[in-house]
Image (cartoon, rainbow, N blue to C red; front, side, top):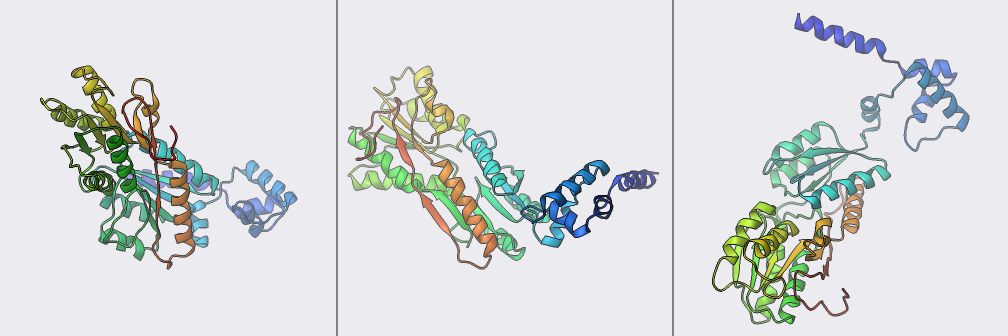
Length: 352
């Protein structure tokens, strides 16, 4: 019974499907002309286009994208594998990627990846025969990278890189960002500098901490305190409480992202009554929209999203056109944005 119902649905669906041959017959053109009209960037005269579109509208014709992709060996779809959709940084990133890919004639297949489940998401993207994959908030194992390479599907890591793989990457220069923060705080006279770390094992956290702590050491200081979070607001609250509920508190805290920095601000001001920035300076990383809200007015390292997104798409399209090309890794510097959450001295030549 279930099989018969399924067959009936299939028969009804097929009975409504109009072929390109019918459109060509009604329009008085060849089937190839119909194909050209519905193929992006293909040539067709205005008169032919008018006839074909009128016939297609009358018949209710829709081109078969799957069949066309098999012929052209291209789906014009880019997979976007993303973690932490609720993080405002990645929500804005999704908007920018989908918009700019559409400008290039590509659609986006968005994969909402659960923490640590990238191994399940990428094989799914490969089943849809996407032309390329952009991965954010996660890194690839060498095994996954090999699977993508075997499928002929280029991959670009956004704001991540994996030393053990040959995968393309576009990143904000987090090392230099961490160094800028250390200099800005030390130049303003801070002595007890602390760090709230992001997700353990991520290249973004590793590089931000590396730049920050190495610059402190170069200038004769050591990291006063360190707590761990996972880039979420909630983890920032826990880390801030552990760090600030002590007799000898830090006088400056650098957080691996803005959400944890905003959590630290809330704990300091509203739970513990600490004066910011008079008693405590707090700096984040990303410059999400909320960072500029008066309630936070967060000093932070701004990631140049437009440049990062443009560079990522350029690297991916280059890899699609030249799949045997060499690995591309691009680093784009951020800028330190001064607001009222920290007493700092901006780098020479950079204005507020």
